[in-house]
Image (cartoon, rainbow, N blue to C red):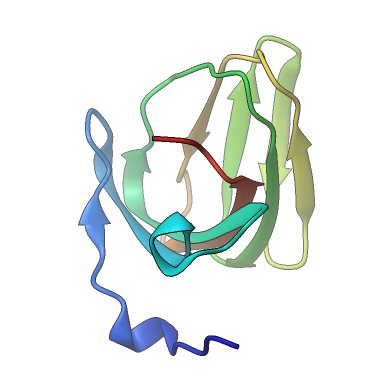
Length: 112
């Protein structure tokens, strides 16, 4: 078993994003075999880079408001909302609220 407190994990700047950080809570570096759990924090007016990749995202919003924008349309983000972003769908997470947008994001474990 492995246990960690979120406050013990150092946030990293999301490259090519704006006012966005990521915390790798459970990840391949500790030996997870199937999924990686991250926490994103995006400040008001911030965003992740628009991007696309071959893996899926499962997202659960903890606090704040925003949108995930994709080729298929926009989805509102607010506390208690869960969102699935399928593989190969271009997307961007945007904080259009007045407080920090914070969400859990789970992805399949990546190689490399």
